[in-house]
Image 1 (cartoon, each protein chain N blue to C red):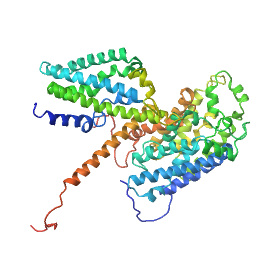
Image 2: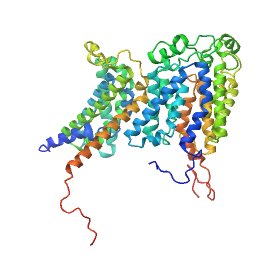
Image 3: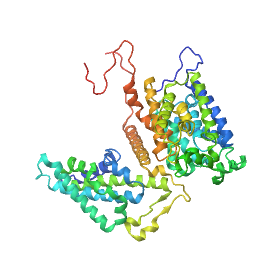
Image 4: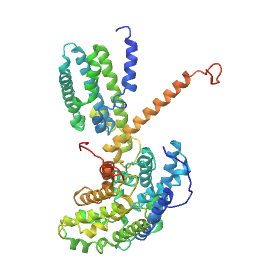
Length: 237
Length: 347
């Protein structure tokens, strides 16, 4: 296992961040993704919380993978995830109370986020702790990245700002991080409301699919070597 | 995959999309004239600007999708969407508002679903709803109609409002539906007496604009472009609902049946929106159900909902139901038995 850890690292990163991105490809955890991505700070907060829960639960599930009977694995996983989520919730209550209030129900709902249970069952329960952590980090980063891009897009188009209310997460000094990209912007409420989330999510998925198609085309073009020999079609046996 | 070819017989009948859409545009002329009379030059500017944006957006997306430009642009369907939207939004709307609404209607409402004939939602209503939920202030800034006791902006002032973003507040007025909705303390008679906007049964402008849409609708019926089913069902259900819930003339009243039939977007919706052959139901029975649904939801939104008028929301909701309605109302094919549907046990 140790010898091909580098290969594994590349593959796991690629899977989590791009090829099997939980938000863009697996389309898991859409409820929090669409529900809280109305601004960068919300997205970042939920992205970090999900990342922490995902990494911890992957680690624990992987550690206990040999002791948990197959028949009751899902309840056990859910209990592990729930306790991790409770820890994160308490931490946020203690250190980021404003953000905790804004995110509200979506923090406890991390328990029901399909990405976490999905990774626990599909990957962590079948792999050693180290790859499981790596998978958790990469999947979590992939999810958080989409969340933050979506949050940024919706905040920019909805309110004309970026990084508003960052003090919820980083303390009072971050209050001045707010960028007013478009001054005197009229609120475009659609982008902040749920239908806007669906539309922007669809656009992001479309961009990813277009990029994949272009990459595939370029790869094929570079692989295709010109046919050697006669190009005549053989018509007789 | 659209098949773009013309086979014989090469007649120029009413059966081509372009011809039908042209007749729909002609049917809109009375309503345009009525709006022009009541709301001034802004109406014409909105119409021109909407048409320009719609054709531009359609051409841009068609080019991106590598579809033949002139074939699709000439079918006039983008113009119908543009004109309906132009007549639905306040005449003094700034240019950017119309730009956002029309381009969303064409790009997201129509072309992203596959273009002409493939859109599950009525594009004009989708654009209208986008604007209504995003910019409630601008979308409720209706100009005061001619003869309602408030001065109207001159042509130059209209241009200033639309192009230069001058404040429109001095010329705006609450619509009849707003007035009835906001009313908490006056009896209907007092409300009517106090507001010049509510002259007659529904307000002169509401009445005439709705009559103009009705005239256009009757023209389309005569030309056999639309069938009577959806409009009659919609108007009928509004009539029944407003009769059932016509709780007198006190301050709690939702307004009389005639008020509901000739105000807001009732007639426009009945003849130009629910008759959309693409996003509506297909069979005659289906059209009856579709129209009745739009009428009921419209009345529910007007009487108890969060918005003064509900035709656009009702249309979108019923658009979502249209495939199910089509499934349940598919007529029996001649020579075949009626198919078993849903949970019915096959014999």
